[in-house]
Image (tube, rainbow, N blue to C red; front, side, top):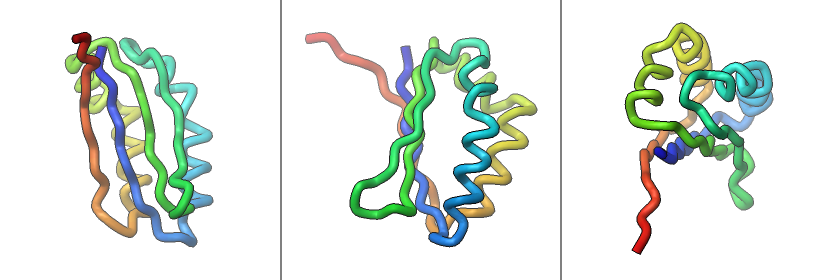
Length: 96
């Protein structure tokens, strides 16, 4: 299981446009093969900073999504709204 976190800082006046993009694509992303969970988080101190938090079956499933037509529509539209370069992490749970 892969946990993917993407932190995005938007131009403040563009956050509503991002929320529309997310609202219209979240169910399609959740239905994508290998996706087990997707949620949107907002920074408590910076209201124009959002993070997506998702669970993927594997890196291969995540990469298949990133190569998909859906991602090809969602990501370019989202990138146009950024105020800063996004940050992304792919993580896995560690049991000790």
